[in-house]
Length: 81
Image 1 (cartoon, one colour):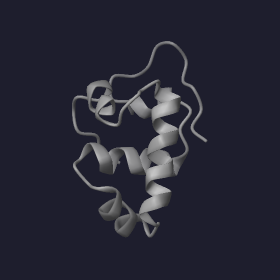
Image 2 (image 1 turned 90 degrees about the vertical axis):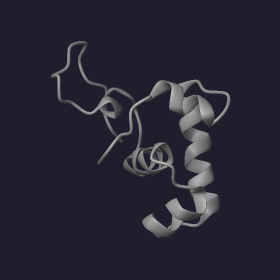
Image 3 (image 1 turned 120 degrees about the vertical axis):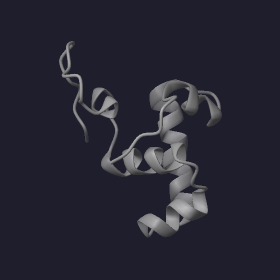
Image 4 (image 1 turned 180 degrees about the vertical axis):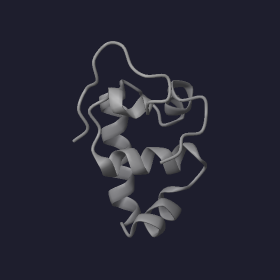
């Protein structure tokens, strides 16, 4: 699990490090925000697309989003590893 960072953070730090996300959730989120489908993400990470969908559902819950498209509003810029 990624731990919560103190209130102030360095300018170049990863915004995902502020949230309690697993490494797999972070990987799925990054690929999703960069336009990958669940099937493409699964192929990239050697997971089934259903596992990717489950990670995205968990992300929605953790981030307080009702729909996957709301994830784009939270992270308007593309993220990288």
